[in-house]
Amino acid sequence: MNRYKQLSLLAAICLAVFEFNCGGSPQTPPASTSVANTPTVSGTPVPSIGGTGGTDPTGSSGSGSGGGTGTSTPAPTAGSGSGGSGTSGSGSGSTGSSGGTPTNNEPNNPAPQGTTISNLHQQKGWTGYGLLPSSYSICSSCKSSGPKVTWSMQQGVTSPSQSGNSTQFSIGGQTSFADVLWNNHLIGQFSSQGLPDPHQTLVPSLHNFTYDVYFYVDDISKSQAVEFDINQFVNGKSFIWGHECRIAGGNEWDIWDNPGQKWHPTGVGCWPKNNDWNHLVIQAHRTSDDKLIFQSITLNGQTATLNYKEDPTPTNWYGVTINYQQDGDQNQQSYSVWLDKLNFTYW
Image (cartoon, rainbow, N blue to C red; front, side, top):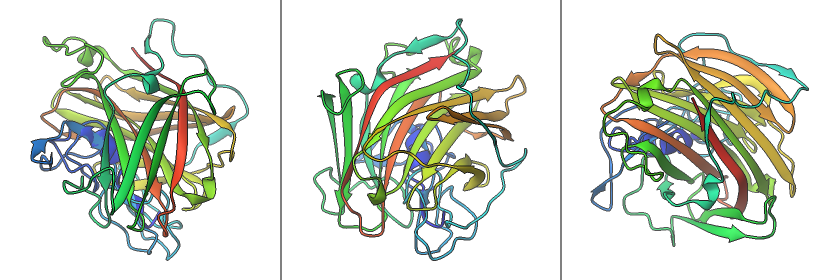
């Protein structure tokens, strides 16, 4: 994951955007990346996004959360999320063990006591951020119209769709390995759901999260990586569960090591279907002693149980956010991904 776009995790950071830069390993946003200096977008403080680093296919380790030494092959997650790592790069999380155990069983349904925010892809609150190599920090001078990196989000799409109402996310531009991160603040500061939690009683009570989404890629060969992040900011700590599916970067799932600011290869393959719907379910847990547990990843009915433990990092942000990120490849070819039935459950 040489060039693992620190965009993804950065997206998480967008929730805590003020915390760290949305592009490099620590973005300024909230949720899902390490905390750093508070970045600003167009002169306005961006809410913490919690993103990860990016991936740089040039073989450099990349700045941001991605880590490890990469080969000259384009790294997955070009520039989004937690940091970059070479395709063959290896990294280790601060604690726990790497590698998941794939099973052919569907994951258990979210606990019935959980609260689900349904069809998030159809809702308001999404903000896109351009991330450029090699820092992968939120690009304050970038516009969605380009030219360095372009992006768009179109809701209400009837085809392709699972529900009759999907959302199309597109990226392009002129900069190799540029990424785009979309962030949505769900609970706490900047809540898009009417859940500001002013007395700070809800967020501290949450320990379990499920990110459940269907995604469709029109030409998967043009994608460096796609990233899905869950971010929680509570008790003065930033919990970023960054998950990146490297495609051009090597067809493997990586998870974000926020303290180490690098991506950690799981050894679990990621082979999403092209021009077809893929069903992804990610489960994450915060322990009673404030550790992150990357529990499992289920793609198209195949579950990899990780149970990987990681440490949080300091933050002044408060809330829960999610990120979705797309990484561009070496030629920054334009491509689109449609999301549908995006449900987020917490308890």
